[in-house]
Image (cartoon, rainbow, N blue to C red; front, side):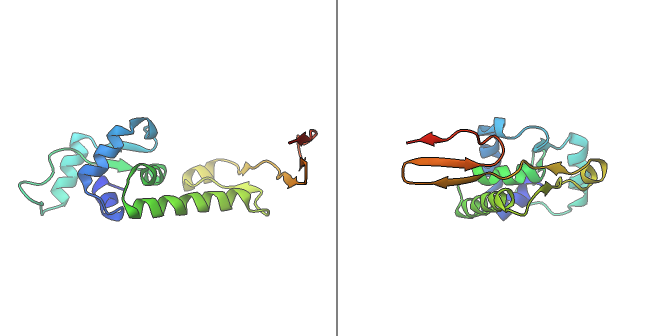
Length: 146
């Protein structure tokens, strides 16, 4: 998705979104986000006939992958971005902690077709008793006391 579309989704100005990305550049590796080349930008501009304001955009837009879209919700400060970030975290935690989940498939359909499923580690059970914590499952040979 392009930065201007995501800015609309997260209810912020495109300028604010780009500034947040630049301030947090380490959070956006090349597989999360990239800036369109001059040729790609020119081709995109020729497809979009109308421009906003005084001549439209002067810099090439950023394009975000699904990982970049999720990361954006953690660096933007709009109310909408905060709500989306909370939902992303809940979805992730529910996927990881769901007891019947033993296989996670890659998000990318092409990677899914080319690779075998990723096996998640077996679940461990944690119980808290009056003065100790017990862990059942793989690598659970120790018992710690408080």
